[in-house]
Length: 160
Image: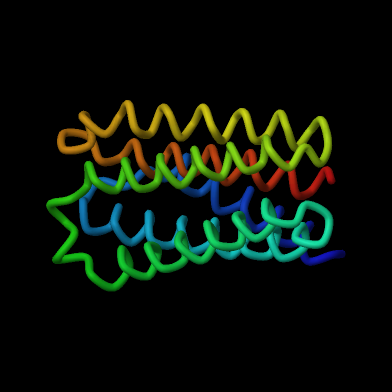
């Protein structure tokens, strides 16, 4: 089994865990968001690395997005106390990363399924930004949105 298919299976499993077991405390959500961004970033960095020969700058842009997502993932994991009051900001950051990832996926035009996946990730990014206002009251949404995106990306990796 290839690295992409293994990463896809891992993304689907982690996505299901996030949806089935939603989180209730802001600090735990911060760790989950950090782990989600870490997995998402690693996946994006590998995908961008593999795409850079075929798509040039789009592959490099996806790699950079992956690296930024990894950095924010570590930030959310290790600086829980500093970020516990910024749950709404997490939605904006995650939403922005998903929107940029969706747009770069649309620009790459690799396959029809990739285009569909990119549109779904783009829409989930818009939903994440729209839900940022509700994050202070219900921070559980971020785990569910990240779970859905991980499942979408995982299925995309498995089927390609």
